Length: 298
Image (cartoon, rainbow, N blue to C red; front, side, top):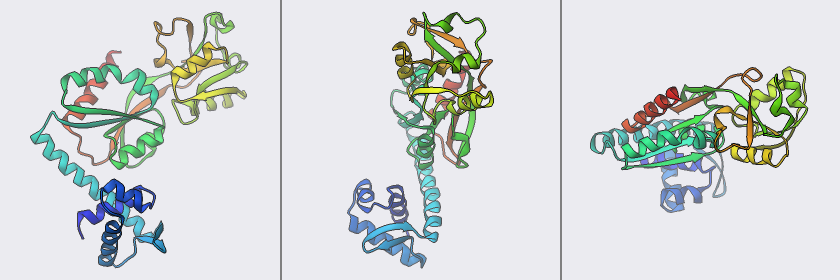
């Protein structure tokens, strides 16, 4: 048994049992991958994969356990590499942040600006996606940390901590009837077509639950994962928007009015997450400190 065999099994599982894709990711041949897996199965005395001819169709019950252990072992191998890099190239390396569009667009830029000036030798990448995709990216080791409001704390493989708290706001054009509303209510909002976030993003679940608990039906005419897209269609007159309050910029959004939703909708908490047991490089910890301090000041 060797680390190469463990890596091959892990990659096959990650590529949904597609041997060709796994071999390509491993920069080796498909027959070589198959041979190594067969040797591992022979040593373990169990089949890891169910086969139909030359095609892999499923993990066996034993294979599911093997893959979970392989993931943990490979994570520790990556930790060993990071330890070495930390003491030989403390200010060099790769840093991947997984974030939803709202976080990447409105929250991270100031911290990233400070970080990149301090660590010019660190190659920084931002991966965007749904909260579930971000969580899986951190668990698999494709990203170092994730920043999102939804879902992250549902994964037992992750450590999560609160990053900042926020409320939704309602955005309308300046000439809209609601712009002059003295006391905004849920039923007044529900009377208009709504433009808001996709179901998996930025507190959308809490919005739906709030209207449902008030016995109100809503007419959501458009959803998007991008706050700027929501604001664009509000400007087009498609409906009134419900967005994260932190995503409203008074200077850039001068043609819109943001109405306070803090008394109407529950407070939301954006979280930071990393994989349990992961060795975080010093510059990753420093970025977390920079971001946390900036958010406290803001």
